[in-house]
Image 1 (cartoon, one colour):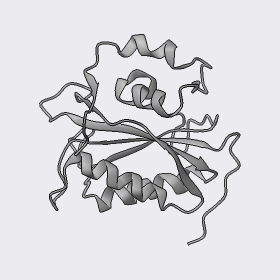
Image 2: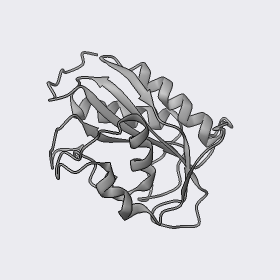
Image 3: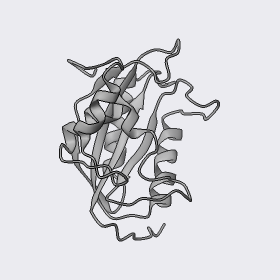
Length: 177
């Protein structure tokens, strides 16, 4: 398959990785998240530049679901947003994700947070991710891999958004096995 090229203002692409269910094959959520990083590293035209620490976080919005394992992967490269979104959905499906209801528990969730300074409302994916700055499970791992990150819409840095997520339950994991 030929990969469309996309000339972004910057090579930095950030992907949020999360899971809160084991895979049907028995891998834990943490194992699946690490597996997903390896799958991202295999995408043509992209390379993994950094991987955050892994965090355990409560579901947002609050629910009776198990806690999530979350992290952010910083990729380097230039690809078409729709092409990348399709590849992420394929990786999720390979991990056993079945899209049912919004915010359902899942064995893998991959979201494009940003692609350089690209801002777009349509078509999918919307960039930057519309809820990224309101979620501690995105902002804290994002700070690990890209502390200088600035929201392409507002121009504000991470420190401007962190107070707004201070009440969300999240903690670095000592061991992501």
